[in-house]
Length: 147
Image: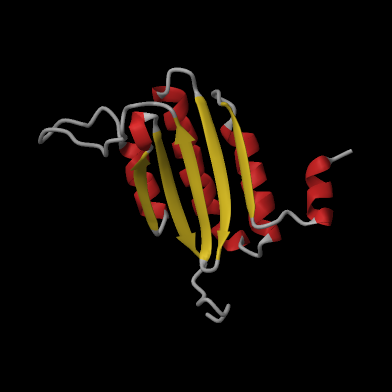
């Protein structure tokens, strides 16, 4: 039985949250879950941008968080979508920087997130227990659903 299809029949609600350990191949299933929810919420128009941004945030957990544990929250908002990825890693993300004429060693993923989303930021958890990196994508409609 395809449980993803069953979710559409039952209605998926306004949010999705899951905690797990991610690996190199975790982004694919998360993109499918995101696409399922976006379709159910009538936000399929945001799928490409949101999938790309989510993939970058999960890849950062794989690369930079020693235990690779994270939580993902997908949240339907009146104007679109909010995605949060929370991890226990102490290091804050840094955008790409390099000296003149030299390539940066990292941070290009955050430049990509910035380019394809409407807003993003980092929230440090209390007591230095980690961080939440979030982004939002707007559907281009006003709150009443009119373009």
